[in-house]
Amino acid sequence: MEYRVIDDEYVSRFIVQRPEAANKYDFGYVLCVCGSRGMHGAAVMAATAALRSGAGIVTVAVPSEIEAAMYPCFTEVMVRGYDKPEDLDRLLEKSDVCILGCGIGKSDLSSEVVRYILANYDKRIVLDADGINILARDIDIIKDTKATVIMTPHVGEMARLSGMTSEEVEDDREIVASGMARELNAVVVLKGAQTVIASPHAKGTIYVNHSGNPGMATAGSGDVLAGITGALAAVIKEPHRAAACAVYIHGVAGDLAADELSMTGMTARDIIDRLPKVFKSFE
Image 1 (cartoon, rainbow, N blue to C red):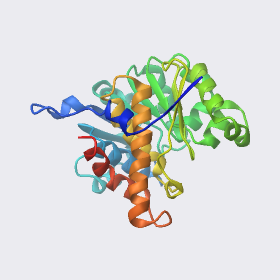
Image 2: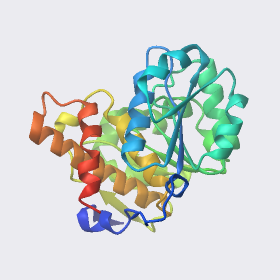
Image 3: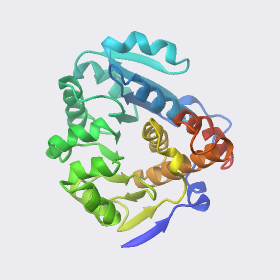
């Protein structure tokens, strides 16, 4: 197994530069199937982070019962409601990447939606939070998917996926992530103090991230990472490279927030607010 530390030089190779004749369709259509009653903020975080990370178009799809509540949260993001998985068909067809699971909850509808998208979508999925928890109930639902999946579990979610304890996952992070990536044929971003990225496509290479700080252990930070990952997965060909760049950029933005505001006082919104400054450094 080979280890690669993600750094500025690595990320600069994959950040897409914008030609003069660019239009919004050149930079990806990101669909966020996120949010539920009481957790609409997760959808806001993921979608806003995707926009701030360069996505050309972002749409949020939420259960119809909270659709109206989402309208005041956005100006640049489209909002669509759904009552059943099939209501998402047109949005899925138009999108390049689907961010699935942030704040989606564990209701019967959310379980049906996760299963439906894994079974029918054939592009790229960023699977996060409750999407992962739903998968953990029946891990076989991912094995026949036609999509390229990037999943972003924290240690507790990985423990549920793998059947291990959190302590066992933490003690052997690289091996656990690598094994799960091979088993599920998915890119695995195992979040933590040193996030690791494993992929069945990376020829045995484990990517290790050193950017970031403990102030990022705050509500919504994972939703922000999902949004960044979705935006980059829309434009970077290799999914593991998109994931590695997203993790690094997320951490650097968090470091800027901590430097300016303190680790204690920073919030996930502060990470989003510093994304433009991080991307400017690569232009």
